[in-house]
Length: 191
Image (cartoon, rainbow, N blue to C red; front, side, top):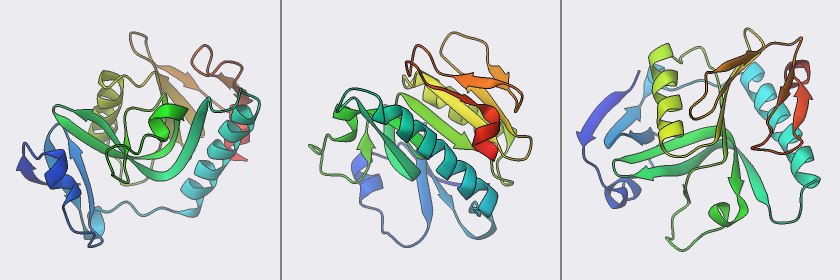
């Protein structure tokens, strides 16, 4: 659970906030602060799945033309929308190379939506919170969203203008045409 702090915060105001150990993000123009028991505690299952997904995407990316894109992980800070402002920390994301390397605004956040956003469910995640995040990603132009459940060993795939798809460990996850040629048995994400 988060605490809503202010409505209509600007990017400049958000970036000026202190680095005091409080996790913050802006969702639909509202600053949210996560403190104490409301801060997601990562565990070994979450970290392992995050590392596996980043590795699988990295292997796929190594087979693509140079400077096609970049894979980032570890709650990469991202400004996915400016009006209203939406900033998020993404578990694993694949960005267009130019978006990932645009330092023109002088911020440590990536300024632009990823092509793929991967959210790995934690015990503190709620259905409402994940639903809102998926809606925000898709509205901001993210082409592909994966919601990964280490507990149930499933991947839920969301795309704009399409019904969600659920993949289990008996199936193969593909990402065509968004990530051409990417394919992996779901089982490998959780091994």
